Image (cartoon, rainbow, N blue to C red):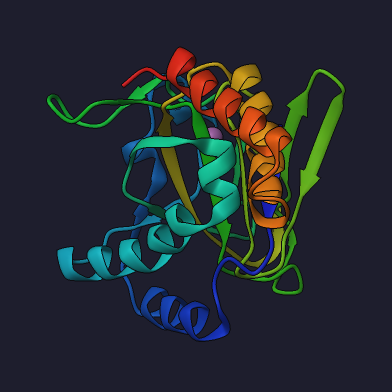
Length: 224
Ligand code: NI
């Protein structure tokens, strides 16, 4: 499943992030890529000071982990820090699947969910669509600045070449409590139904049954 969060970042948050990124140092993105990805990765990544990174991390990841759809559909257990990537004319990220395990020794996490937060808008660059392949065809994603998408990390995807302008994104990986993307999709739907029932008919017997089923399914499937 591909999930889209509109307006994850408010205008002020977006402006602050952009201001910082406009003055930050960027380095070749291949430095952080795995063996296979290195061959197809053509972008730049922010190499800011610890303070800058922490500020941006809190700003972007804070909004993501607090978002109700992300909580329900990603069921996060551990998160990576955010990587801030820049693509200018001619840059792209060829077809790949994300590395299965990331992070340093002692701080490793499995990548179940990949997230992209768009920090520049579709009018700021030509090309640069995020293309995600699913068994039912390909999704082309080019969102408004401040929007986010997330999808299973095992999906084949790429960033099409940027023709002109500048594409700025934050990307992050999540180890989910629920490893299997199919089980996550079931829980996302059931969890949404449960929230709605708890809101509209908190005392109903049906609500109680849905609530208990949801809770026990999470217990049955969760891996920590
Ligand atoms: Ni990727």
